[in-house]
Image (tube, rainbow, N blue to C red; front, side):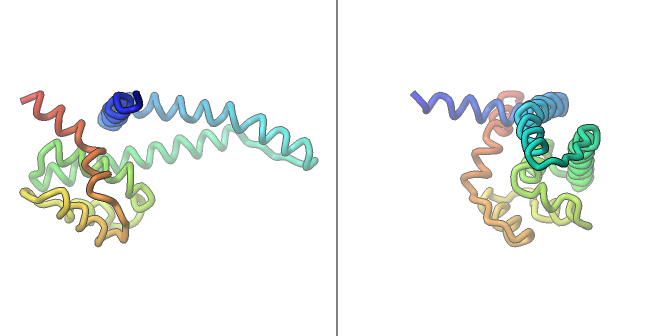
Length: 160
């Protein structure tokens, strides 16, 4: 019974990751839910501690700033990958790696060029993941990467 749910979830995740509008909508929903859950807890903590200085506008500002930064990095990845002659699927694979595993590296100098340098025209997933793990000191599993990008690849095959 649980098996049919996994492909559906995977398809939804890949669809959201590849569509900028859907990413914004999903982020808004997640932020709204977090806000609804966290606000009562913060209010209770403030009441019991006696002092609370809650700046909701600043919280939203920080969350939207983070989203904007991630979108800028994703666009930089796309520009660099296309300039280097990689396919749109490889661009989306790089963006998926960034969102799922390398988002903490995104603001570091040279990140995009380091990520693009991990890609080659005819490389296996194992080779790519090994290069990314070596370059960024991560422990990404090839199977996890393949699961994350499988829907991208299936979409490309169906478009051809």
